[in-house]
Image: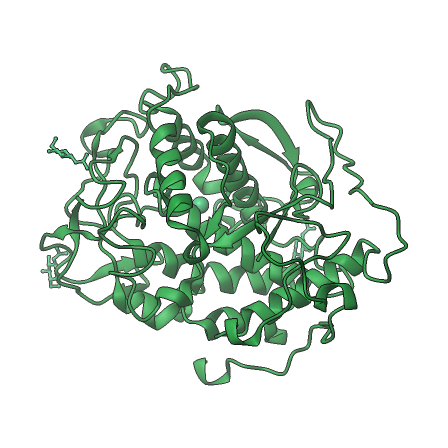
Length: 434
Ligand SMILES: *[C@@H]1O[C@H](CO)[C@@H](O)[C@H](O)[C@H]1NC(C)=O
Ligand SMILES: *[C@@H]1O[C@H](CO)[C@@H](O)[C@H](O)[C@H]1NC(C)=O
Ligand SMILES: *[C@@H]1O[C@H](CO)[C@@H](O)[C@H](O)[C@H]1NC(C)=O
Ligand SMILES: [Cu+2]
């Protein structure tokens, strides 16, 4: 399988940048927003494109500008997204002259990194908005995000709405960091290939103050390896991690919900002993960072395959391959990223957002979808939906549709339809990735 990773591209990508994109921009600019109308990106610099993703990003943005009729000349009037959604309290649309830029974690300044992790700790110190009778284990605002994910797990993974649901979910988290904790920096993503050879210590996972914290302390665990993909894939025993994270900004971070389906033998599931799964279960954040998983399954070719192999040019095969094809021993970059983090709750499908590394991981998942959507210049990929409304169609259920509604519990009372979540510069969204 891995031998046939790089196919000739079947997708129509423009190979030439519009003049406005290629022209040298003004000297020094903050890249936290860009003017998509003016197309004022910095010039493409091959020297900064080790693995080809910058090229793909520029192609994607060029296609986006074409789709918005911004590609040709400068005479066009400013266009706003049509913001068709008429839901409560939204509909401002996306001002294409001020599109937010999500950036690679490694490109954030140290100050931005500290502000980002500080804002996560801030959310963790704010009160929950769940009714304690409904979700007694949500003890703070951060937990609200864990709770809604945990509660809906079986209807948001290996389903038609997986990508849409998680796009909305991480955007709501980004909004909460901004609105409730004052974070004004870019929302970061974890480009897995940056850390595939060595996830710890790395730019993302390290013991200093400018990362997302270290590995767990070394505690013997999972003597037969770690089971992933419902037990169909075994991560070989690694004699590191497993214990509490004691370094970095999330040392002493408390996890309250789950685990429901733990993958670390040191932490029993919360359902054991007759407790309902939403009971508070305060414990330390544990990690079991897996070098094997990162280096075997999260390299650049694993992502490029999704973007360039014609076998994955429609949404069904794309999203299945990305999430994981477990019966064939293929974890997919999504599951592999989760199991690179591992531990508790990082390895638990239900409570995984309880590890603050969840967000940079899912931002990257969203970015891969964004690239995939935009690398087809025709725009035909936005509205594709495949799959049903239950995890792996168990129990059997109807197909999902773009009219399906996504609700987010106490995270927000704004419910949206899947069709409002297909474009990152429409509906509630106004961002791109650089
Ligand atoms: C590991 O595998 C052995 C042999 O199959 C089994 O006896 C043992 O219970 C397993 N240990 C754990 C912790 O699963
Ligand atoms: C973590 O908790 C321990 C014990 O309460 C304390 O000594 C230590 O300073 C804390 N570390 C951080 C980074 O807050
Ligand atoms: C559900 O989707 C599958 C695959 O796209 C399709 O074959 C099937 O006919 C659909 N079922 C219904 C009831 O529309
Ligand atoms: Cu999830």
